Amino acid sequence: MELAIRTAMLGLGGSLLERLLAADTGHRGPRTDCGAGHQAGFVGYRAKTIDTVLGPVQVRRAYYHCADCGHGVVPRDDELGVAGSSLSPGLATMVDRAGAAAPFAKASSLLGDLAGIALTTKRVERAAEADGAAAAAATQAHAGAILSRRVVPLPPAPLPDKLYIAVDGTGVPMVPAETAGRAGKAADGRAHTREIKLACLFTQTSLDPDGRPVRDPGSSTYLATLAPVEQFAPLVHAEARRRGSEHIRQLVVLGDGAPWIWNLAGQRLPAATQIVDLYHAREHLHDLANLLAPILGQDHPAWLTARLADLDAGDIPALTAAARDLPLTNTKAGEVDKALGYFENNAQRMRYARFRELGMFVGSGAVEAGCKAIIGQRLKLSGMRWSERGADAIAALRCHDASGQWAEIWTETHNQTTVA
Image (cartoon, rainbow, N blue to C red; front, side):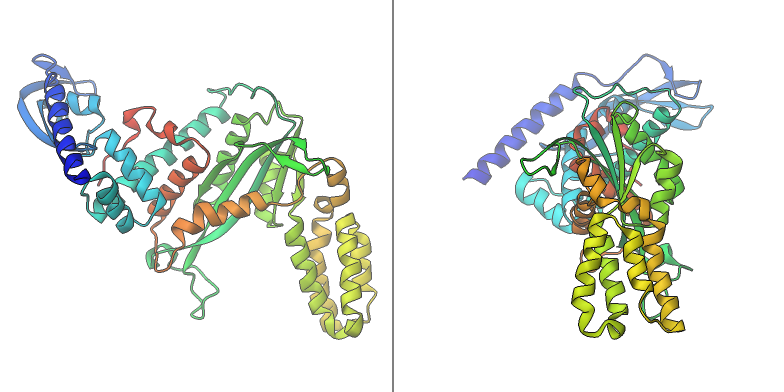
């Protein structure tokens, strides 16, 4: 009975919507601007079926043709936000939500079961990826406007004490065409994934009763792209400015030690304090201790405990000296030097005792959780293979959602792009 009533009400609502849309056919006189500086002439009226949240409706619209450009112009489609598309903005929002949350086949099924809207899997995929691409393009355009000072963001109020920029990367499975010619770790020597870079920006204002830093609730925003770091860096820089980096007292960049992260920080955010994630550093120290296990013998546990204490204190010289004081063979010495290079190159980023005194986070758990929740739970499921465009588009939708910025995609109907 519930489903029958819902079906009837949707049909009634669709009929009402169709009549409301019929009140304006989009006729703008005998001629109208074609958008390219010419005048398009009125030809006649043409019908179009638009899928909406109430079901399909038919709209009769005025059609114009520009002889100079050789293409048609339908003013009403532009006004309704359905130019080049047959999904209404309301339904497109639902499709994007479903397509960003679940695999496209599942999203199609959910739309049918929960909203009573029947759309094919391919149509859900195309619509979600088109709008995700539009959202990514809008983010890039907005970043360019901020960096060129055409847009100057107002400082946040109240002003937080610290702004963190946590950066990481995670592999996403790709179709073979997207990894052609790339070396990888697979048995065949080829790459089957590509790294998607993720940034999580959040603020900190207070400490808990034990003196540990507390992330400000609802302060996290995310950016993700498969593009090279040269294109990722401006996005991060612009988002940092948007979040008030030029007004906040303390900037911090958190990373796992990858050189590209520190290059990004040094070039774009030179005033920021750089911190290597403590838990990655501990993993490297465990690897070093395992490398030295044959030499340490029964002293292995005690040596590792002492070195972990050195690391927590930020005493990297003591850590490296303790490793080099061991009786190493030439071969082993080379391996140890390579392992110690990680600590020596990042010594200034490992002053953990001092960072804690200043009430700073020393772990990049926020961005690592983002890699799992935003990227992994949607783009890395079993059997998935992505194109670069598709992965970037869905990642953009999920970042907007996780950032609490979903409504910004739909501020203007023209954020939508033509679905190929």
